[in-house]
Every structure is written in C-alpha cells, then in structure tokens.
Amino acid sequence: MMEMLAFGLVAGVAVGGAIGVVAARNVFVSALWLVLSFIGVAGIYAILGADFLAATQVLIYVGAISVLILFAVMLTHHVMGDERSNNRQAFLAFIVSSSVVAALGVLAYRTDWPIRPADAGGSVVTAMRGDLAGSSAASTAAQTGASTALTSTVDLALNQDSNVVRLGQALMTEHLLSFEIISLVLLVALIGAIVIARD
Amino acid sequence: MGENWAFVAILTVIALTIPILGILAAMVLAPKRPGTIKNSTYECGLETVGDAWVQFKVQYYLYALIFVLFDVETVFLYPWAVAYQSLPLLALFEMIIFLLILGIGLVYAWRKGALEWI
Image: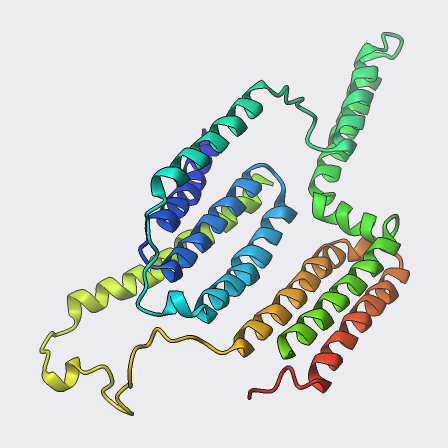
C-alpha cells in the first residue's frame, strides 16, 4: 500500500516533469522541467530497490547532465534570442512518440519478467532454509534453534550487504582492472573536452 | 531498508515545506507599497542593458564538462566508501591510484588554462 502510494507520487513527478518539458514555450524552461523528471526517475529506481542507481541518477543526471544541458541551451544563440521553440511538427512528433510508447508497452507486457529473490545471499539462505525444513531426521528443537540462528544471519546479511556494499567489493576485487581503466577513460574524456573546447 | 527510505521521505517533506512556508509568510506578512523606484529592476547598482537572454560564453560549457567528469569520479568513490570497512588495505591504494590518474586530468586542465576565466 505504502509502496503503491510512493510509486504513484514518484511516477507523477516523473510524468509531470516530462509534460512540463513538452509544454514549456521556452527551451530553457523545458530543461528545468527535465530536472524534475530526472528526480522522479531517481525515485522509481529507489522504489525498485536499486539505491545505488538512484543515487547515481541524482548525482549524475540531476546534478551534472542537467547543468550541461542548461549551459548548452544558454550557448545556443537561436534559443537565447527572441525565437521561441516552434510546434509546427507537433502532430508528427506525437505520432512518432506515441508509436514508440506503444511498441515499448507491448514489449514490456509480452515479456516474461522472472521474479528473483531480492539478493543472491538471501536466496542461498532461503534454499538452505528449505533444506532444513525438508530434513525430517533433525529433531524439532534443533531445527527451531537452527532456523532462528539462520533468521538472524539473514537479517544481518540483508542489513549489511546492500547492493552498494557489494558493488564496492566487486569493484575493488574482481573488477579492479576495469575500475582503474575507468579513471583512464575519464582522463581521456577530460583532455579531449579541453582540446576541443580550446580550438 | 524501508525505514531508511522513510528518512529520505521525511527530509524531502521538510525540504519542500521550509521554502514554501517562507514564501507564504512573506506573501501574508509583508506590507505591499510599490513605488517606481521599488519596481525598478535594480534598486541598487546599474540598470541592466539589453535582454538578459543572451548567448553565454563557451567557458561555462567547459566548466560543466569538467564538473561532469569529476561527478562521475564521485559516483565511484561512493560504493568504495560504503564498502570500505570490509575491504583490505589494498583498496585504499587502489583508490589513491584512481584519484591520481584523475588528478593528472585536473593538472592538465589547470596548466592549459582551462580553469582561467577569459
């Protein structure tokens, strides 16, 4: 119930922001509405349990990409001049975008979405629990003791290992090389941007 | 998990309420006696010349680009900091290398004068 309420709120923000983007007369104002839409999308990620993705959405899209878009708009002479965005192609744009939405909707509806347990550690423990319940040899007392112990470990694991922690561990151990290469990619992007901008 | 998001929700409500309260209080409490001087664009300083909607300098865009890159860097610092307790000491040096490589970029931008306002 609470989740539905939160989803409704957040989806309303996202869709409302998107409507604002389309409805605004000035492209600059459209860009500001886009920020609101980004915030709504971050909320949707949060509801889906992808807290790292939500934080990234706020940090990168709400924080940085929107600034980039706003500066790009401010740099464009035509937009900052008297000219306002025209809606001559509105009907064509409506047809194209609504058919894209329809195609995506049909695709989403027809796709079989397998529901997995929230995290791998949890699923392992659930499987172990199932084994425990199935073993008829174990005495009931021992079984209860074991399952309470398991329950506490499950709670501990669920509390401590949020996906951010596991992402950090994976980045620092398994994917160490890719992690260090990311910094090189960012360096190249930075130098490239400076070289192009100074030309 | 759910409780943590409740804190976010509470913060959001507070963050939205305080500015709305401030604006409403100003609307209700403030006396309104407009005059020609009070209605001018600037009550102090120079009157603006021309339209405010002018084309901005490219410099802004370069700043934004550099900001985006260091913002992405922050995104990688975040899971590292959260998982720090469970990581070996090696992770500290890995992050130092990561930051040093990006530091080279900052030094490059500095030396090329990209951070200077022309």
